[in-house]
Image 1: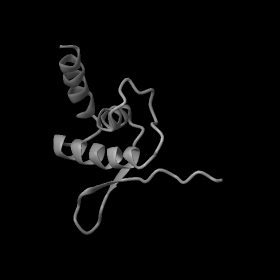
Image 2: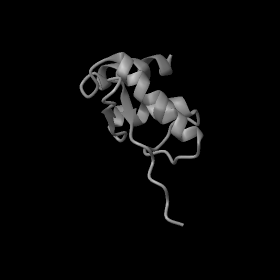
Image 3: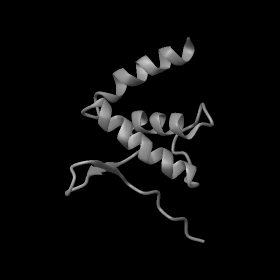
Length: 84
């Protein structure tokens, strides 16, 4: 029940910054792939699942994205490489 309440709040919040549910899911999915590849979370994660963390990051506004000129699809900015 708690997760359903969080999801409803998240849905209401993201509509201010992202113009559609489809774009929200697309950006979050791309960020989840980055997290699975080893990127560090940009928010205090309440979950260990990359998809949940990515959604929290998009809602928090910590994921920057832009439109791809060719397809018009959103492209999440890649995680900067750490200087080693």
